[in-house]
Image 1 (cartoon, rainbow, N blue to C red):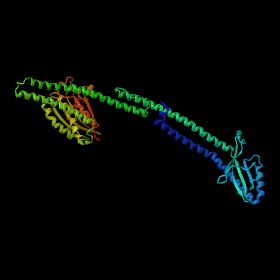
Image 2 (image 1 turned 30 degrees about the horizontal axis):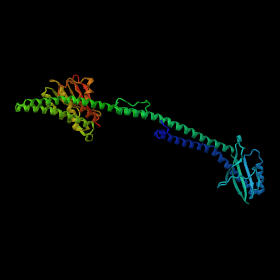
Image 3 (image 1 turned 90 degrees about the vertical axis):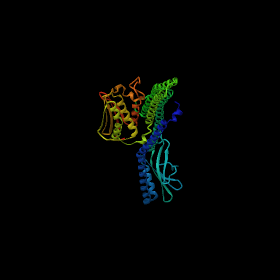
Length: 458
């Protein structure tokens, strides 16, 4: 990856931001260290200089110029002193002191000046420096009192040099870290881009690689893979639905065409024959319309088109209404039909869709339970869940097929000899997902126990 592209990456910019913040922090720390060491010593020296000035001024006031000159000569004669003194006339003539001449440095507003005493008088041949204050005496005389600042200036120079080196090292490390971090992140992002390009080319089995670090990119990859799993499942479902629609609609359409064709081939048939043929054609057309209606209902539910219509639904009252509709059908078939209302929970949902789901489960139970069997519709509640259960004594659903029958057009009757279109449980599953509920298919020993479990706090 080119350096200009790295410089434009967000990761690199974030790294530079942290680098600037770190350098600022280092600068603040070194500034505090300087003020705590060299700054403290400098303030102590200035206080000592001010004290010397005060003492010499008192000497001048008590003994005059001669007394001041004698005192300055006495102090300057000490070979171990680290102080500097000068007394000069208005014309610049030096009267006493241990400096060879008046410093050329310009004093600040308070009279303080920092000057070089000699070029090589300090340690290791470094310049010797001093800090002094200039005090005006009566008669335009000038008094300079200072202290040796050579070692303190060296410490300050070392601190400033250290700051420069630290800043340079940190900057180098920061830039290097930013480049490496950007390369690492962009390499993983480029891997995601390559995977998505292959997916766009039609390979839906591709998945984004994960590094198992558990970082943000891994979580992004996990979400993308979950989304791709869902898309692949939907695409497979669409293909399966397309194939099943073609298979399921071909038979009724063929029957419809054959019956119409037979009538047209025998024009001598009477009105009753024509009427019977039209009735058969109407039955086939109704079956086709029922299939398309079921498909449309599932599509609307999966699109969550009715979620805004959620209202409190009394599950017990809804179950009782469904029982009134299917109890005569069960009795006509010779089935024992029972309703057990153990609770009257209320859930938030679409009453029409929930009623359709319960009706589909009841319809399957009545349709597949043989004569002499039993169908039980029950409503109960436990904790945060409400349950509507339809249990029958029919053939049931094998355990390995309980997930497959939730898909569209999947039927246990592979020959499709029994009435139905294989969409009933698909609609119930879609309604359950819309209501954040569960459709549970369990063994009733014998028969099937189908439960719609809804959250009461939805």
